[in-house]
Length: 292
Image 1 (cartoon, rainbow, N blue to C red):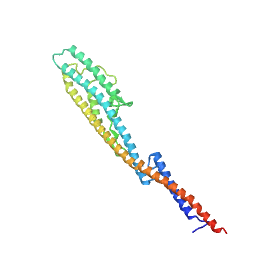
Image 2 (cartoon, rainbow, N blue to C red):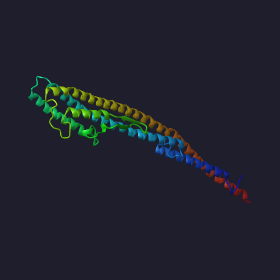
Image 3 (cartoon, rainbow, N blue to C red):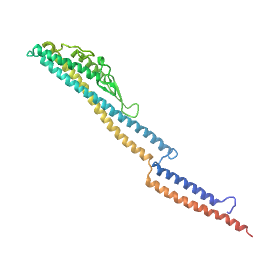
Image 4 (spheres, helix red, strand yellow):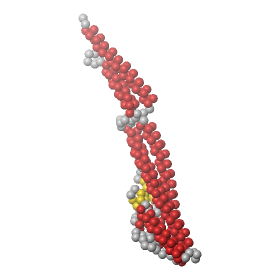
């Protein structure tokens, strides 16, 4: 039907051109950004899933840093306890030497002086070992350190992903024992007499052995926890890698497919534009009918 008011062919051509233009714009946006989903209109469900996964990745990345920081803190504590172990072993050796009948009083006095110095240094290590500006080892007379309290490590992206670590009981026992072992384990220590006689030196041997066992128990707990944190970090890294891959499959554009879509849209736009031009000639046919 030929009509002056309605050009059906032009309307169809306009509709096709508009649709092709929309497809072309979408393809060009995707190719320029690299994302298949640039707004919720592109894929509402996909965007929701990708957002949730992205939040999980972000949380796990922070948790990985948490495990690394916590491992460093535990290694710092374990290194300090390594020094404590060395000093206690030396003190035990001196107590064993002073307990022997071959040692005279001058020998025991010299051994006692070194023993007192080591007792003061034990207090110094427990008082001054810090991590991030916070006291790490101290307890009781040496102050309340991080290890003297129950600790909670955040090892995941959700509130339930935590890890508990508590050696506060062992730290309390060690603090009490060190006070018994040396009078110099105090803020203002004084010369002691722990190994000043054969009998007192002999009684110190077992106490020092017990202290070494206590320190060994704490070091063992620190090492086991640090190892666990390393495994947690490795697992988190694996989860982050695979979750990022999942996000990529949802969000990233397939350049091969989208380039083909863009070429198709360009051809359709050119074709519909050409047909729109051709549809205008149909109006001229009406004028020829009105000529006398």
